[in-house]
Length: 314
Image (cartoon, rainbow, N blue to C red; front, side, top):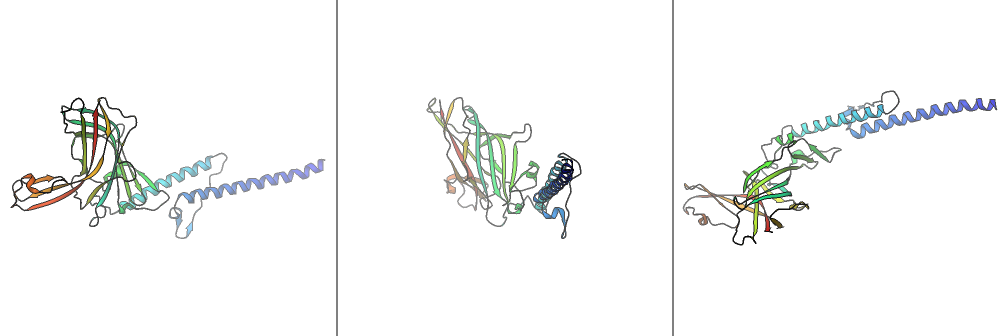
């Protein structure tokens, strides 16, 4: 038995050593796979030579944690380099596809709450997520990430639409604890810009049927400076144009409908002293606003979106 035991022990030690060696080799291979699946070849490749990194010696998970930290650090560096390359020579004062077709801005709104609604001021307020999306081919990229969540500081470095609320009275962006907005960039150059706003807008009310009245309060918005030759607004076809929070309640009214559509504003510039007048899409005759028929007219069209909130009093 003693001889048999002595013959068994060396085999056990050899097997253990072999197993340990195989495990270390597998760990080494796995680590290198992690590295090369996380980074492009340009990160570790110089010419045709590539460098493999070996984990530090020691037991426990410190080696794997070091790999993770290194991966994250290099990923951040890669994204920063990618953004720097995209913005090299980028002019944020020029719209996408300048000189070509107009840039299309897709919009949708998520209304979180409404109120107060004031008959005295003929205004209403609402808290909403206002989302705009457009494609800027200058920002197309390729890589392991389909989407990049960007810092809001990027907004100052890229082009964005100059959207304003035509009938807005007093609106503001929520800023607690930080400005409530975010930017996402997709590989095809699509930019998603979302912000949380409180909007106070005018609502011309008809109180003839008070207290059984239904008020139709509009929200109209579009580009402040770009005509429809440069920028077009469309409701987002991939989701509801205007969504209402399920738990939203109003103190005096029920929201019974919120139809949305597209409108075109025509601004007529005249050589006469009167200057300019605005015609909506239902008007086309300059005589309707009293312009001198002998004056030379210039018409600019602006693409706008309109949603009407139908409020029925309790």
